[in-house]
Each structure stands twice: as structure tokens, then as C-alpha cells.
Length: 539
Image (cartoon, rainbow, N blue to C red):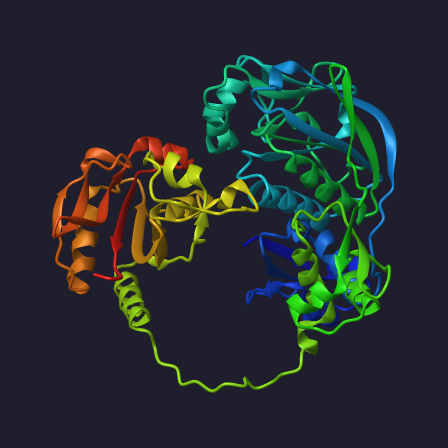
């Protein structure tokens, strides 16, 4: 989950309440306060479905409502800047969607700059699928001259990238710059790359890779130009989150005209979305007995505009920065938080049962002891995944998957059939940590409509090889008293001749081997990876 660093003094000033009051109530809006609190700061985790809380400003806005200091819908004024972003047709096949804004009158401090940079990176992960769908650029607008152009340029085009002093071509940036190495795979297969330039043809940004050094944000920066590019309309939601957070710092938001041939749109659009919710449905789902007026008050504590129309219905206004509200039930969840989980009456259950540990859970406990003893760290990846990650990136044919009927996003459109792809995703998210990394997970998979329990393990480091993962597989099977035949595998996820299947009575119950270089590249990794997966339930 995203971790947000909150500096106490900064938070107190933005909320208008004491540190003690804020921290005592913060968990009630869905926050997990870390144990490594320092004298001046604390790290807090939020669920990935609330990207508007990925910054100190977003947390402060939510807490002002929850504490009753400033309940109801936040209002942000957006003035026209007259600035134009001209979008050329050359970007249509590469990265077609762009939203922009200007925020003026900011006074940056170290915590404010850190909050903005962390928000940017967390949104890249939470909404942007590691910059594939969304990439955000923040620039000092005083150093450039509008109007701006968004185009696709040849790889030979050069500029000075952020944190460098010499000019590099875009092709060189993809090979030599740390951000190019990390995200260059997003542009694989394209002959031209996205670029944002000003009226003097100076480069602001090379999305989704790196900004230009020219527009670096410094403490003396007062006015920002923000660009958000991507392949999905969630671009506009990310823009709303960023500009509304900056407005909480006192920034004045100005709109930008996005001009594409004869069509124009104006961004950002911070108008709230209106919906009508049923009081009876809300009470039935969350188990309360609220009147329309009480339901409206609970929602206002969560910064949602709410007005009772009669005894049965409430008109709500959803803030433009909320990316998580897709159904009335999402609104009812906020109503429950606004009511206060700590206000629920504690009751003993009406039935009495005597519990005992399930045999499968005992088996999982044995597995965890074995894997921990072998030096592997346990992880708990999501059960839901995507077809692209699960099959395409693993070079495996699509087969036996259980699809989600109405997925919230393309990131979670199926139930996993194996666990190994999720471990590779974890490696991709932790490339900033030292190697070697060795992790495992044990949990349910669903294949062909049947639920099974699998163990998966993976290791990444410069000398990871077949002998390492075979030794692991044999040790685990010996410790778990599983006797299986090891035969050569045709699994395309593994290197030819470096993969093996595990068979019992001719039935495949597992596999292990060296991951294919294309699999490693697909996940954005740069070191050899070996993996192992074994069915441990129902044998």
C-alpha cells in the first residue's frame, strides 16, 4: 500500500488541529499508522483505492471534514489562463491523452516539495500502472514560454534531462538515464517518442520518462505548469488530484486549453459529479438506521456534498478528485466512516461456536516455517490480477482463467491461476532495494472453476540460476513429504532447457526454472530471476 510521510508541524498547520487529535482520529478514515514514527514525522499507509490521500494536503483536507472543522464539498476556483497546449496527430498512436493546468502563488517548503514529489510517484503507481497509463510532469513555468506543443519526435532529438548537465538524445536517455532504464520499455516498438516543448522549442518533458532540467522545481518556484499524459482518461482524474492538493497549499488554479486540430477541451474540470442515493438502501447495506439528514451529515464529514431531498433520498456531490467512487455502495462506505466505526455498539454474537484450525491452515503454517528457514520472505499479493500480467507478460497461453464480470480497472480483471507472476510484480516494485531478494507466497488460485492452494517462490540477483531453484524445489518437497517426478518443461515462461515440471502420476503439480529474458524484460526487471510453484492443497 502507498506510504505517505506526514510532518507533524506541516499537518497541524494545514488541518488546524493538534497533533494528538489528528493522530487519534486518523485511523478512523482508513489509515494504518506505522510503528516507526519519528519526533517530527510519521509514515502512514492508505488503501490504494484512495489516491487523493497520497499527500499531506489530501490527508489534511480529509481530516478537516472528519473533525468537523470544514465539512462538506471542497470548492476550488479555476480561472482561465489563456495558455494553449497544441496536440499534434503524431502522438495519437504513442500516448494520445493529455491534461494540463497552471497553479500560481505557491510558497514551497521542504515538506511541501517532498509531498508533491511523493504524490507524483504514488500516482504513477496507484493510477498510472508504473507510468504506462498515467505520467505526471511538474514544471517551473517561469522558465518557459507558452503556448506549448505536444508531439512525437524522432529519437535523435536532444535536451538536458533532469539531474544531468549535458544534453542527451531521447534514444540515449532511454539507454543511459536511470529513469530511461526503468521506464523505457513503455516506449518499446515506437519509432517516435512523446515530447512537450514551448514556443521557443525548448523541452519541458519527455513523457513518461523524464522532465527537462530547464523546468526543475526549486524552493523559490512560485508558479507551476502541470502536464499529465497517458493512454486512459484516468489522466484527467490524476490532474484533478494534483491541482486540488496544490490548492490546499494556497495555490490558485488556472485552466489550459487543450487544442487538437479543430477540437478543444479545457482542463482541469473540477466540477463535482451529482448522484441520487436511497436512504433505505444505505441503511440496509451498512446496518444503520439513519435518517436522510443524518446520512447527509455523515457524508459531509467525508467531504462529499450532500443534501436531503426528502425522507427517502439524498442528493450527493462527489469531488472531482475522488477516483474511487464508482457505485452508490462506495458512497455508503464513506457514510459508515463518517458515522464513525468507533461509535458502533459492541454486541456479543447471537450464536456460539467452537473453532479449530483447518487442516489446510496447519499445512500453510508448515510451509511458512520451511520457507522462512530457507531465507525467503513471505509476501501476500492480491488474488485478483490482469490477463496481461498473468499470461502475456509470462509468455503463457490464456487458459482456464476466471474473469471478473465488472472489474474496477484492467489491473484486476481475473482471478489468478498461479502466484508466480505476482511475485515478479513485487520484484518490479522493489527495484530500489538491494539484491538478492528472495520471496514466497502461499495462497489460493482458481483454475477451471476449481480453487486450489499453491506455494510460489522466486529469487532475483545477478547469479540466480537453475541449480539454485532446483535445490529449493527438492528441499521444499522433502520437508513437506511430497514425492514428485522431475521432467523437462516446455513452459514458455522458462528458458528452453532451464525449466522443469513436477509430476505425480503423470499430472503436473508444479514447475521451476530460470525465467525467460522476455519475461524478465516484460516486468521491467534487469537481473536474472528464478521461480518455483507447487500445488500444496489436495495432494
